[in-house]
Every structure is written in structure tokens, then in C-alpha cells.
Length: 344
Image (cartoon, rainbow, N blue to C red; front, side):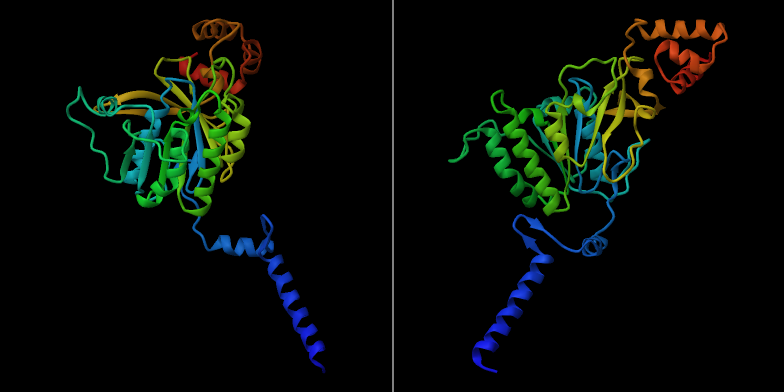
């Protein structure tokens, strides 16, 4: 066999090897492997644990959103405290060991934080050393190449996570990183960066965000999140806090998006909590599970009290729960639970 034939065979072998590598590796912007190879690799990694019941799992980018002054920060600090100590919040599940948590706080000053977690600035709550908090340095000077503080935060976030061995990152809140002229740009930039972090590391991320002004007589949906379509595309899970019409300190939690589980906390099974200050810790206290309809602001019937009075009247008339629900515009299950609560 002459040299040219040998060279052709060698070139063919090299070409075939290259093709084989391409079928099991990178092709342009895609990573392509046999499906069984993906599963075999996934089997080597641990099953994600729950961080906050089925609302948020390890290695997920999760969004928590609510209207202003409904307690997003209160719940987020409570979750961070739980994760840093490896202790579940009563009524919720935690499957992970204690984790290093970094809380980026763009909302409260240190004095406001102290007030929330003390008794009149004395007898302060004992946080774990695993719980780190960061706020902006008011004296900072933007480095060359960074035109805004938003640029600076995004540029330094990844190295901050690595430098501090962070396992859980909580950002309070996404709205801070939106200036009026370029809201979509910074939100998209940050979400891409956070998604990259969850892919390249084992970090779990919770991002807090506001909702535009909403109608509290309507159920919570993904459309209530500001910039909902873009943000929902990047997150793995999302849940929301709703305001309850039953009491000024009642809130309910509802799943909006999930990938690691089925939707458990939907309109027929929201988690109802009250906001209380237990000694020196401001907290969400678990109460029960309920229908979202029981906590929505009444529309045609006016107040919740008006609806209850109407319900009592319909019961006296001998109507079934199904018929009562049709009259009041709520489900049969909501009628049943409300009757039980009111002993009707």
C-alpha cells in the first residue's frame, strides 16, 4: 500500500473520530449526547433537596413576588435563617443540611434590620455565622468600564459568590436593579447571570420581585409578576404572596411555576400564614391550607362579612354547597371550608 493510500485511511479515521466526538459533544452552541448518556451523568449527581417545601429546591433559580408591604423580606429572611441553621420553618419542609447563605439587602438599613429582630433594640435575635448579609457601599466609586451601579453589581456577583463559598443566594430585590430607562436590560442581564451560576455551581438562588398594582379580588397568576414573560422563562420555580381579605396580618402562599414537583399549592390549596413578631423575630406563622377564593377581596357582594351573611341565608334556604358556591361565585370546596370555619 502506497503512502497516499495510508494517508487517506488515516485521514478518514481522523474524520470519523471527529464526527463521533461531535455527535457526543459540542456542535456550535449545542451540547449533544445520547439521551441515555445525559441520564447516566445525571444519576451521578444528588437528588435536589427541598429548601422551602415544594416551593423551592436546591440548585434552582426561584422568584418570590408580591405587592409592596406584604412581607417578602420578612419571609425571605426567615427562609435564610432556616437554611443557615438547617432547621425547618414550622409547617414547611427542609431536607438540606445547614448552608452558607448570602442575603443581598437593597431594602433595609442595618438599623431597620436591628429593629425587626430585637425587642425595642434589645434582646437581639441570634443569627447563625452561616448567614451573611450584604448592602451597598454608599461611598463606592464606579470602576472604569462600569457606567451604573447595576453594571457593577452584575460584574462582581459571581466572584462574590465564589469568594465567600456561598451555597444559597437571596437577592432583595430585583426591582432595585431596574432604572426607569433600562428595566428590561438589567433584569435580563441579571437573570442570565444567575441562571449561569446555578448551572456552573451547586448554588441555589431566590430572587424577590414586586408586582404592579393588582386587583386583589382576582387569583394570583404569573402575569402579576413585573416583566412576567421574560423572568418566568429564566426561573426554575416561582411562588407568590397574596394578601388575605380575612385579616390584616394574614397572607397566603401560592405556587406559580415548578419543575421538580407537581403543583401542590394551587388555587384550591394555598398555604395560609399570619405575620407575627414572636419575641424578637418577625415571622410568617403557618396556619392552615385553604382555597384561594376564601382570601380574595369580595367584589359584587362587597365585604367578606357580606358574603358570609349571604352564605348563612342560602344555608337557611336549604341550598347545597354546590348551589351556594354558584350563587357566591366560589367553589364548593371553598363553601365547605368557610362553613366549617364559621360553624354554619
